[in-house]
Length: 462
Image (cartoon, rainbow, N blue to C red; front, top):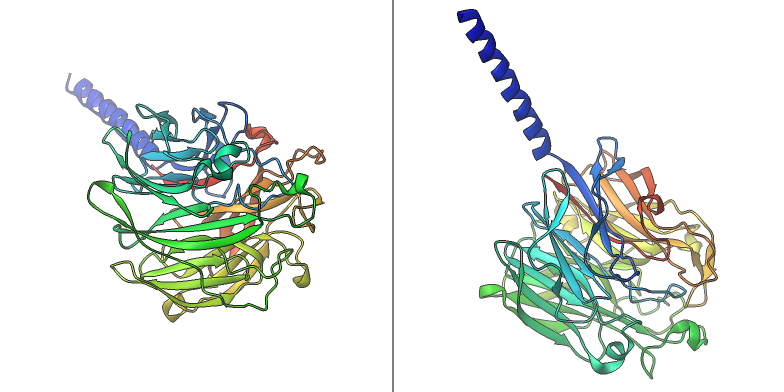
């Protein structure tokens, strides 16, 4: 009888251990999410993947997770503007919730993230974005910030004057539901493209606007002019977040003119314009891509939100659009949307800067690599040749071992007979902090319709 009891105890102990091991494994699941940005009515969705040790991705069994809305249809020859955004999909800092936009439906979907990586809508999801064309999100604690671009050519009346672009704030209830709090309209045709919480001061956030509305190639049918007069402009915003998630504007400013001799490709005599911004993880510094100057701008900000320009450094890429420092604040990665033929480049590039120590305010470029691209080229709206597929948003994994870049099939007109171009690239970060090509995953077999331009990439450990 004693032997039987001991044996029973051992068996029970083993079963408990097995259950606990399973629980630990589930608690440490490593996932990655992207948005399909599906243009078919009500078919927009999030795709989830397990991140494997070698950098490969395994689709989650529950894919796709429908967002309850529709993505933005930028069916042009690479028109600047509509898809120029960052963070259209974000995850809360505790890894328990995912937020993403339905740009054409003007809504925000909110999901609970299960331990197995699967997603489930919170009560009431999706929610109105209280604007036209939501395109960027930033979350901190109980506050969600949203930028509404109002740049959807398939919501033409709003684009051409009925509505403004805007920045909004929402309070996140305990069950994940969103409660609208405040809104700041952006006047004079400016188009918001990103909103971003300071990583060291949750009472501050930043935004940037980018508007390009000009008939570069002389063919109005291809240029899709939204207004009556050509307009190219941009600006920065400093926001304060107060009690109850209320958003107020501290300041807005034009970007300082730096390299006036630089002639932006296909666009002469244009101002310095911001596209892509991110704060340093431990210092009061804001990095901004100066897309029309091929430079990285550096700003210092005070705890009250006063923004001071520190200078700009050159970049060996064309169209710096997205910037992302690593978690330790030693490297900054910049994604350049187009190649520079003068440097022998054939595709979009990723530039690496050293921002350690004193280089935080004066970044030093230490590497550049081309993003693998399939397919051919086409003549875009600026009347020059570009690749069929180019790089957009990016993300790092929580461990800082891998860097991810999502690429979009750019030419969405009928002349493009190819179906490739929507790809998720994985780069391994080496001992010098430089990304090296590891894997490329074509997204068509995962359910991304080739007429769409997938967007957003976020990682989480559960």
